[in-house]
Amino acid sequence: MSTHDRKIISVIGSGLIGCSWTMVFLSGGYRVKIYDKQPGQAAKAVQNVRLQIEELQQNQMLRGNLNSVEQLALLSSHENLSEALEGAFFVQECVFEDLAVKQAVFHELEGHVGKDVILSSSTSCLLPSSIFSEVQSRMRCIVCHPVNPPYFVRLVELVPHPETLPVVMDSTFALMTQIGQAPVRLMKEIDGFALNRIQYAIIAESWRLVKDGVISVQDIDLVMSEGLGMRYAFNGPLETMHLNAPDGLEDYLRRYKEGMQRVLSSFGPVPEFSDKEAEVFIQDMCKHIPSSQLSVRREQRNNLVMGLAKLKKMTE
Ligand SMILES: NC(=O)c1ccc[n+]([C@@H]2O[C@H](COP(=O)([O-])OP(=O)(O)OC[C@H]3O[C@@H](n4cnc5c(N)ncnc54)[C@H](O)[C@@H]3O)[C@@H](O)[C@H]2O)c1
Ligand SMILES: *[C@@H]1O[C@H](CO)[C@@H](O)[C@H](O)[C@H]1NC(C)=O
Image (cartoon, rainbow, N blue to C red; front, side, top):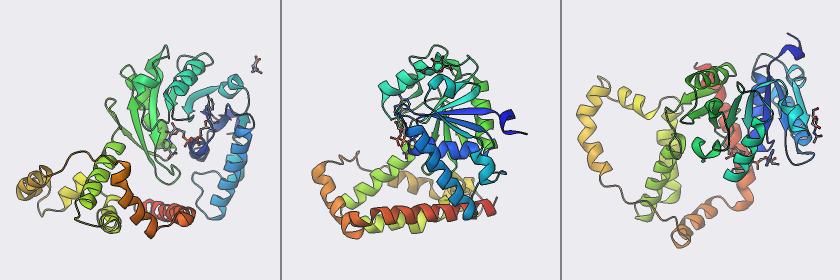
């Protein structure tokens, strides 16, 4: 297949997430056209993606069946929106997390593409019914919420608008699977989607335990990183229940149901996370990891996540 026969995906907004989606789509063998409203930004994104892809190839971490040269030949940047959208069957929006900006972007996108083109948003926190309110044919709209860094953390939450057609959900699911991501379907929209609802539940209980003087900031983080996190990279919480009793889930419930309910009913209210309340958390955290070390620590984290991705691939 030559470069020009390949199907086209347009990426609108070329910051951190726009570049990440671009690399994931390229790894799946798609032609990717990047557009950004900020003049010069899309071209900069192409340079950025080029460096990252070459480095990944050197470290033997490049995804997909094509080498770095073949993948980069599929990439182009555009300053003209209609040219960036020409020929695309799928559009991934990655602009600022601002409702008014996203609504305007989708309204504008619709004017340049046919009715069967899937319009997808990367939003972390906004609901499909809000983001797509200015779009006329909303049945082809969907949220594909990635997790940072998407090249190594494969989960994508697919969240429909109430009018999204099942076939749009199905083809988006198939596309995500084909490019090597791990999609999950939400049957309907809900604030926080699934990932952030779970994440916030963990944050809230961690916060309360520290605030109530039960455990320190460093130790509650160890409860996750040395405890729950060790298995959660491979088995979710429900499968963990199934594995943790000799006869599986039913057995687990028989043994632990009452204890779970007792503990759960002792949970406190939603924390305030107020300035005053947060002071001690911030002080403790900064003593442990001073702000001068943040970027080193971030890079270390990304390398470790990369290693974990490699390990998970081996266990597939
Ligand atoms: N950063 C994360 O960890 C993360 C994770 C999951 C989802 N997301 C979501 O992805 C989206 C993008 O986030 P990001 O971190 O890449 O932001 P970013 O600030 O790095 O990039 C946004 C880009 O969009 C461009 N832009 C702004 N308005 C535009 C417009 N009208 N048309 C075209 N381009 C426009 C900007 O010039 C900028 O290059 C947000 O909705 C965010 O919530 C982010
Ligand atoms: C963008 O490209 C289209 C098609 O090539 C052209 O008609 C249009 O005038 C261009 N827009 C701008 C702002 O240059």
